[in-house]
Image (cartoon, rainbow, N blue to C red):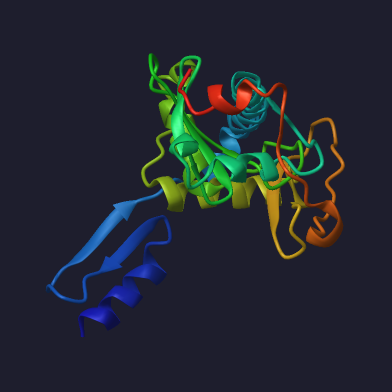
Length: 221
């Protein structure tokens, strides 16, 4: 009965999330951003997407400068993967703490608390937008405060924002270094060629700028 009522609510309340609790007799209703609000604030979201991409590029450059690693610009994920599973999977570069996981490197500014998840499976294209991560970035960026529009639910609202921007032809889909993986980036940008990774011919060992760097990279900066 509760499930049936919840499904009916989803039809009548398209701008809300309807969470039907399977263990307790309750239904949670949460407000979401509307398509009209996204369209009205599309220029803001476009700028956010451009800033996200730019900051991602800057942080990747900072990361490998501090780690003194020679970056394969076709497949930067090879270098990022090197640091996984070691004490260097997390640490600090400049004013940013980082943590490597999955296809992203999470950064948080130690002063402003700004957060960004930088994707590294798209060659030198670091502007791929994930719904949850994009919302987190927007809400944590000091320069955007106060926000012109409220983001209620990070994932649900983030997905709506990206879906509407795609419908407005402001975003486009791109392939990643993996044949079965793709992403979304701002359409108005300098286009970067992204190559498909072939492990039989493209794999290479990580090269450091000096032998000393092999020891230095185990420390935080």
